[in-house]
Amino acid sequence: MAVSVSLLASGSRANCALVASSTTRILVDAGLSCRETFKRLRAVGERPEDLSAILITHEHSDHVAGLHRLACKLKVPVFLTEATYREWGRSARDKNGDGKIPDLPKLEKFASGSGFQIGDIEVRPFTIPHDAADPVGFTFRTEGTKIGYATDLGYMPVSVRDHLRGCDILVIESNHDLEKLRTGPYPWSVKQRVMSRVGHLSNDALAEFFTSDYDGGAAYVVLAHLSEQNNHPELARVAAEQALRERQGLWQNRVLLASQSEVLEPIRL
Image 1: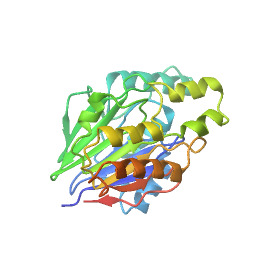
Image 2: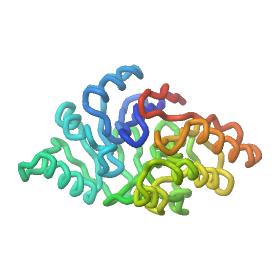
Image 3: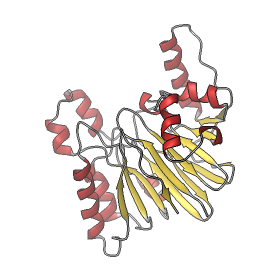
Image 4: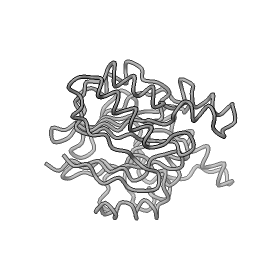
């Protein structure tokens, strides 16, 4: 067995992860530049040319900034929903200023709730609450292992909680500390957006999930999409670990922190 998850970048500026099995490598989001993506893949011992596909959670720039260049360079299938493709295309067209939607050489569209296969990895997308056209999280199943990936969500609806049951590795958002956000430098309109039900998950909201409805199955919990302005890694870690400690028998979870600037060492099962 050789299943691994690598967080290449996670935060407000760029997001990119790698889910790998013995024979398949899937890039989740493409928020880094093509050059930086290649650099960080090599840093975790991966070859960019071995990528099998690119999956996109939603069209915000910190998740798609490097998508077009990567897709053209690697010529691998790019999977996104119809609505996400339309919004990405509109933004890319406006940025280019030529009235044309950039070409993705191998475009594959999927619908939330409908699973599909990439190599030996079964992918199941599910809807998450975020202010994007059609945002999704994913679960991945391969070689007897289940991986959950859910960032950029304003709260934890029952449907998301259900999808994340039984994960061996869980990558989950812990975006902000409420007090730091309230007293921080963001304009009030942005603070309201972040705290809304289509914004981002706070440390407290994630802790509530851990204490009330988390099954405790994951060997590794990765706290992702931490705000550099409105959070601190230790605040996120302490909130998560205290919540897990309150659930008797769940302390076997190993809590890791994904970073914006540094690659997280691959998690291997």
